[in-house]
Length: 424
Image (cartoon, rainbow, N blue to C red; front, side, top):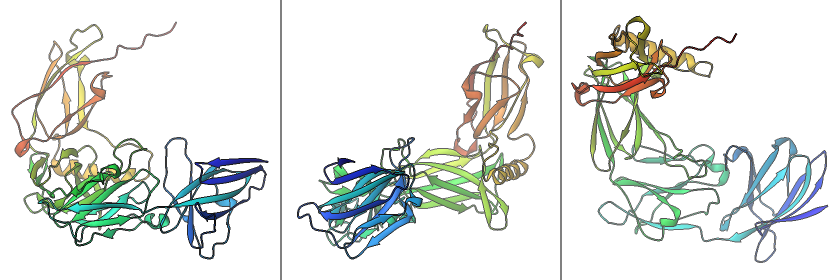
């Protein structure tokens, strides 16, 4: 038998066992007395990431201070246990499958996470909604409303309202977290280390856009999505607020989004794929930066702009005529994943509505390998028919003001992989 201490807050006794029974008690770290009302939840420890979502189906509440027992059938190869109680900082412990473990988790008293919210003009942000964003709480902000994901309740998380002076207190968190604040006047995302000074809200952004199907205005039977992922990059970073807006276009293809977080967002056409169902059009979307308090304008699609470039071999010499012929088409969806059929259907409907040849071209270079395409709409394109080893096999035509530009996009020299040499 071996005894371990984890982070000075958990005493853990382990014995090897094929059965693997996990039991434990939860006590106040200062007094050593059992805590009567506490909750616990489990999650798998994955090698590929530093933290994962706490699993709602493993949530257990203990109301009489008795020890807890974990059903080993709910365990993963390595399981993390989280225990928490109002007024205390959560504590965790890790256990391995196939081991008996007797745990004593010691919770420390904790005042929580406190701060103050100010409106963009410096006034107290009374009535703002605040919450901590973690991989489990998954906050979203749509239409000046803050919502938490369905798993938030399994760690006892819930949005709170600021007081008359804009002050708030939230329960402590041990996973990477950041503050999200939403108010009629604006929004904020702040690192917890920044809460020693007031958090000033940023005014909402606005989008005005036009959807074109190639060079034709979309009608009222189309829609556009504006979205933001919750993950900022590395998995050890706290998430940001995610959102998804679906906006119908009018009979001139116009759309507007008010009261949106100023962030790096994805804007994409949506095609109808059945009654009440829409799907993003793969390859037709683009990224866009929104600024606080400003209206950003965008045209998706359009007449387009000229594309120029050259096809060269490994020796740097131009490859023209039929030897250098290739095709350009809107980047195709992947194959073999759930939902792929819907994505293919949406792109097919979009291309049909745009008309033949708008997002697909066959290119025959001149004798010296140079080529020019008169006009190609905004989109993410792939090059097929040639083993191009540069430009990642494709290129992006960024949105243009009004959907057109006379300024060519120069792809430069596209190098072609030499043919394989037969092995004798």
